[in-house]
Length: 165
Image 1: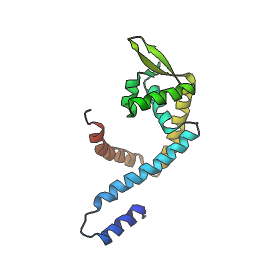
Image 2: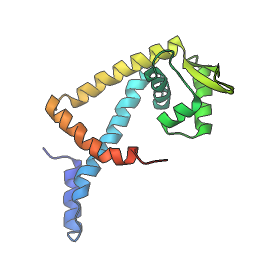
Image 3: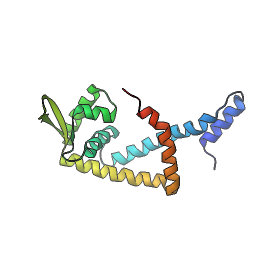
Image 4: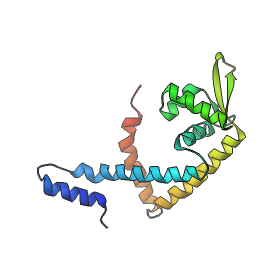
């Protein structure tokens, strides 16, 4: 079975036989797959009236476990956005009734962000929808193939995810 990357690689080999274009065979597929997955995720989240960034914040809080709260700094670490962006996101989620700000009992100047019941329900529903969609995407791979692929992708992503700072 041929895909768009096969055609792209063949064209480059024809036009630039002096270059080794082998990395394109893997990384162009990863890049194209990321774009397809982004579209699929946006669709899954829109069915629950959520934007991808809203899902990221809500599920970060949900994964924290009861009482489903984190400091804004902890949310920054998990979602990889700036402080100003996170403040804006928390404000918008609070206006929708999906999170609430609470005083941090261990720091008089600090706040904690907590999921509301509606925020938790929306996160749970959106996650279930996303997982169903992602299972369908991976259905053509066996369990062993999915495990192999996950391991190979981990080898590529771990150096980026484990850079200090």
